[in-house]
Length: 86
Image (cartoon, rainbow, N blue to C red; front, side, top):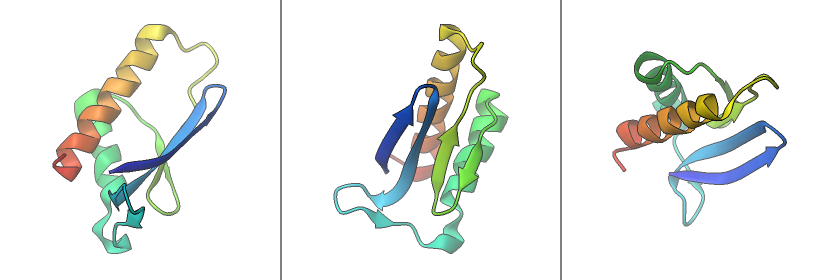
């Protein structure tokens, strides 16, 4: 359910899609990205933001450490799996 991974330095993002092999997007009204971000915040303690089109973006401070990045990655993975059922 993840496609279009991109990054530049510490900034990163990806798009949530219904079918990664075809790139078919979720219907906008489903609010998949919002549900993923809510799970990340409530269950993982990570706050980030949505960009238009179910894009999840990250821009951690330059003082972020390896443990904090691991926390962000783990919270994101768990949230995507929980929301998409993958």
